[in-house]
Length: 137
Image 1 (cartoon, helix red, strand yellow):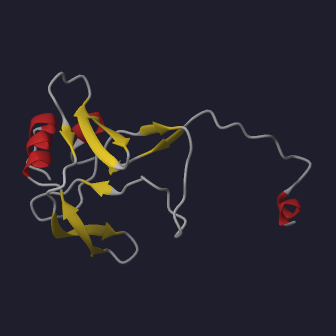
Image 2: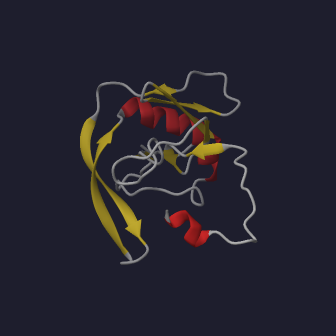
């Protein structure tokens, strides 16, 4: 009923050519056939993982540009990573994860917010070290 409130004679049809999510913040995009939203209105599978430094602060691609070469895949909700153009095995999320706290910079408050998270462990850290040359997790 309220869709007519936003309609105007100037309205043009919109065609979606492709859809992408970013399973790991600051890494490469993942093309998807459809987008699903959770009960909070967030995209399912989008930025559900993040790469952190030694202080458990989320890093960004500007500081580590090679993160753009880390290619994610989601199979049955399990995350896998590979380095673009790399013939070596990548990383696949396993069951051995440890709870941790991560810090994410909040532009509004100009402070770090702290969130409960799960550390994917030494295998993920070893992959990131090999793939981008930095000691990240």
